[in-house]
Length: 200
Image (cartoon, rainbow, N blue to C red; front, side):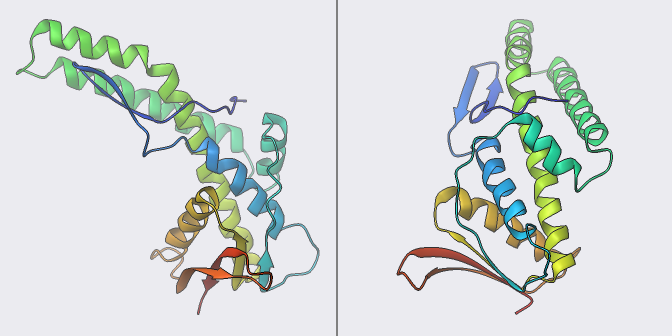
């Protein structure tokens, strides 16, 4: 079982050094929110077409994450391991690519490869978080489809917007073919909320 923990923003690596791109946050941040949405829409015995989620800001624990996601997917850990191995292979190909760059000096190549190796564990942790996030989104989509949910409401903040936007984007792809609309609205108490309308 892989450990899920915050790693940090995306890194850009070259022979000049390592730069952090603060615009590309770690999916760990959004995984907590995605899990809350998943449990929120699948916590009752009756299918409803409209769901409203109230943020609980729970602490993410590995055991809970795996217990929740394993209840939706068989062989989850094997899939995560395979995806993580593929990512490690991609890093190896990245090193091979740098070694093949004819326009770089030997020193530049060594520095670049050393930077890749130094950031390997960091990047793998980010990828593990991203893999679990992707599986959680997939599970949310399965529940939406199974329960024929037409409307989903969450609090309005950056993290919820990111997750709801991901759900919206995937639902509107050719695979799902849903006609969706993501809006910002005021609820009955005049609070700003995010609403996702599905098959409008």
